[in-house]
Image: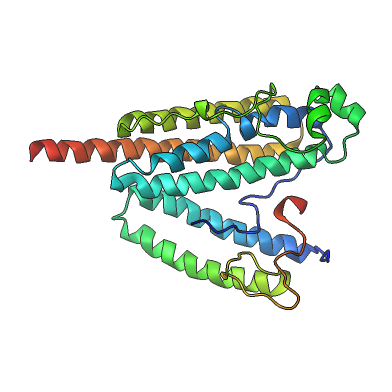
Length: 87
Length: 189
């Protein structure tokens, strides 16, 4: 069950965390500045980039989300380790 | 509804087993100004706050759960290799007797979390000022904990959380201005 967590795992995860950080920041900013067109453009661009990055990560290391928001190979991958606190 | 994402918001690394630091960190897990209180406070206020700031409360409340998971990860990593003897020496003997190494929602002094930590006044400005104060108090707590550890890996993650408190406080201050502007517009009308 325990996947090999190589250097690539950590660098792909960090890349995703970096994109998500920018997206969280933009989200909160836009919540109080809803008319900033440039920020919305940046948000949409990063959201697309994020989708590609998450897809690549999931293909290699398994689903990030459940309840149907991520696909699974056989056998059911969601229950595989590592959980976030184990890496 | 909420969807869980199987990753931390920001990497959490610790360079050594240190149950004493874990004991202090629990303040941000189940303490008055901790992440659990923050998440529940903001999400609970959403139902009576003006529509213009519901999005902000939803998003910050959700981010707080990601922070709660980071704190839990820190505590888990700092204590997972500790012997009962080490836990006892770190002042966690009472905790160990009741919970083994399991996490529990209490503060650094062992007082269980209580809903009394959360204010919900129904008045938008009172609630938002409460939120700003909560963020500032959490920021201060993170600073005290950063000052008490020499673990640079842990400090890195704690500094991230400290900075998030600053950003959240700033957004809440903007929300106050939004509410005030909205209220003034209505008065002129």
